[in-house]
Image (cartoon, rainbow, N blue to C red; front, side):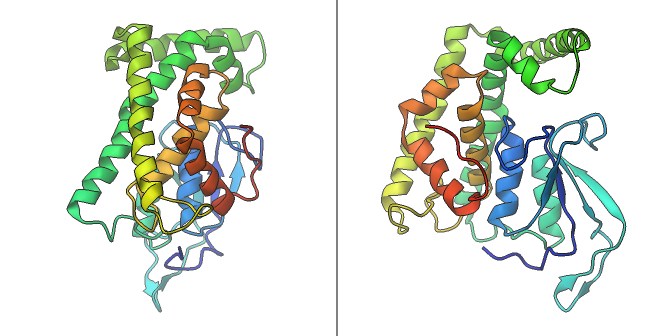
Length: 276
């Protein structure tokens, strides 16, 4: 899918919170953003960064040339020399779409499909995210802490980890997830993956792309915002060692890894693929 303008002069850097390059990381929102950029054919670099300096106080965020005040010339915007930071994966994609850098993946959707697209994203980001976060931080705290706080040396990591754990536990309780039992959370999480898997089976069966080409959650011929999000959540859940039960859920529905694997082969050939 072509972008509306060349990105050669944008100089986009995606800050992912990890120093590794050429591989996926545990954050579904980082993978979602990278998928969104690659769906649009936009080149970018990656760097570590820090949520402490990000515009929204979290990962991911990007830095690029500022197009907000650049007039259109010949159907393209000229980027200024000034750099700007953008935060939040959804707002980053929205801003780059408004600037004409990314294609509008919702442009061809009718109202019903737009609603479905938003609903899938909300299910993942506003429900599944908290169920998985609970598994990571409450059930597998040390694995999560030592991965997320890789740059913080001992003994400071112990203190920072405890403060972070206490904050996240309070957030989960206030949000509601922390009020459920472990069994209830597992059932909620499993139901989400089961339902998404069933929809992907339907989408795959109606796809015209054959056995190798990507197929999309809404059954169309092109990805939507929900596909970038879903790809991020599948891959992040599969590679995270702090979520063994989430990984087991995904393994139970092979269509999930088939879906993600086809996207990987098409859009992330330079990245190390996960072990199956």
